[in-house]
Amino acid sequence: MELGDVENGVKAPDFIAINPNGRVPAIIDHTNNDTVVWESGAILLYIAERFDTSGKFNGKDLVEKAAVWEWLMFQACRMSGLGPMQGQVGWFKRYHPVKDIDQSVHDRFINETYRIYGVLNKRLENRQWVALDRFTVAGLHISHLFDLKFDEFPHLKAYVERISKLPSVETAYKKLQA
Image 1 (cartoon, rainbow, N blue to C red):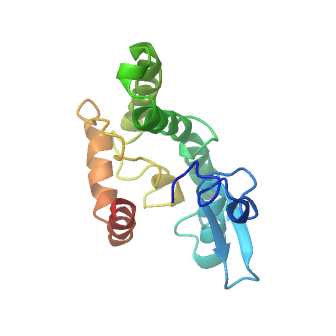
Image 2 (image 1 turned 90 degrees about the vertical axis):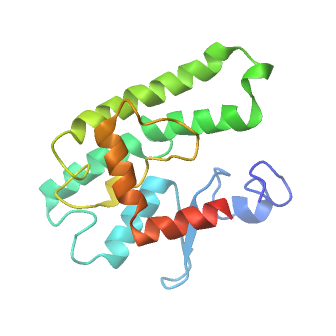
């Protein structure tokens, strides 16, 4: 699927019927009356509430949930920091290479992404996971798809390596690279 393709991509009428924002991701839960959910944060919360009755991935009580929600909102696409910046980096690397525009445009989004990586790196300094003492829905938004380096962020780098080895994440990356 070509993202901007009006006939076959996210701007096509059949996809707009699923996500009126014309962006990925979006899901249809065929096991729950074809419920449609779009935006990554909403999807993660929906899946956690729908399928994780133990609260392992979204928090077991309101205090744990608040911690997960904070870090999820900080990272998730178009909600706060990391998602929008990584999205802009990806957009400019794919559609507007440096040779076509001023380097400062690229630098703006790359530097902001690295600033946010610094926040996450500090958060992970003495802990294994972003939000709680375990993997949660708040831990899914760090991407290594845009050739950004984690060398200056050793705790984040270790975290990305840790989540990249989770079987479900390996499966997802294989599908993205296919």
